[in-house]
Image 1: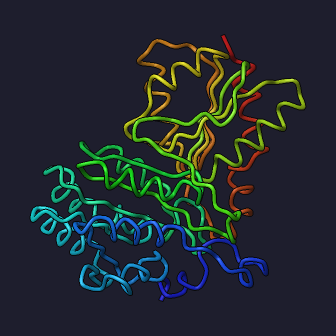
Image 2 (image 1 turned 60 degrees about the vertical axis):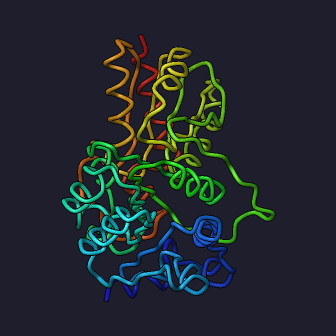
Amino acid sequence: MMKTAEKLRVGDFNTRNVIAPIRRVYGEALLEAGRADSRIVVFSADLTAATETDLFRDELPDRFFQAGIAEANMVGMAGGMARQGDVPFVHSFSVFATRRCYDQIAMQAAYPNLPVKLVGFIPGLTTLLGPSHQAIDDIALMRALPNMTVIEPADVRQVAAAVKAAVAHDGPVYLRIKRADGPPPEPLKPIGLTRGRLDRLREGRDGVIFASGLMCAAAMEAAEMLAKEGLSVGVANVSSLKPLDVDGVSELTRRGRVVVTAENHSIIGGLGSAVAEHLLESGMHVGFERVGVRDCFAEGGSTPYLMRRYGLDAPAIVSAFRRAYARRP
């Protein structure tokens, strides 16, 4: 029942989102990839419309498989087909695509290093349905698996590039996708994505905010707010969470030696942990703060409310940067 309810509206309930047509950017990108590459097959776990895979199903039905509410079986099926030369894209909500079938992912995709592409929707706090549907540990789980690549596009403009990067990589990939809340800017201007590389969104001399997913927009807003206080703060989009662009992280950190990470995920095991691990192992002494879900389960609610409630909005990033800046070496 919850899955059916989620199909009605992924994101915030408001008049603009209900009335305005929403372009299904991921579904379009997947279909385009399928047209170009006959190896691509698509799986759904009874969430076809919610994961935009109905576009693929309707045009390429012989390469679409409905597994039902059985994510573990679906991953096993995908692993078997990958061994036969297919490139399976496996779809569910992020929490179900990772936590519910973690052993199958480990043993039937990551361990044999097969080109199974796991695609999770409604990441982090971007759902009304509370802890059962909020994926706040999925990046930590996927980062821990050997051979696994983890990609999260900043917004709908980077989704097509994320799909292309997943197809291009000959190994397992976890794509963390947030659907559009409303119609994207027209014309839609794509943003590139390279596995293992970060994107510099804003230059700054006093420090840097490393952000992923929807937190990129919040980080840019925070940088503007800090600029009014006389601080020049850079922003980097870390769409490739694993492998991490360690050279890019080091270069941007050296400029101001103040670092804030911002993620729609637990502060444990995700982007903040990845950046902290690298900086400490590199011997870099910096003022450092993490913005994310602080080791707790969240309640249900609209995305803007949850971002404020759990300290993931632009003012929270500003406060974190001030604390890190005060501790700079």
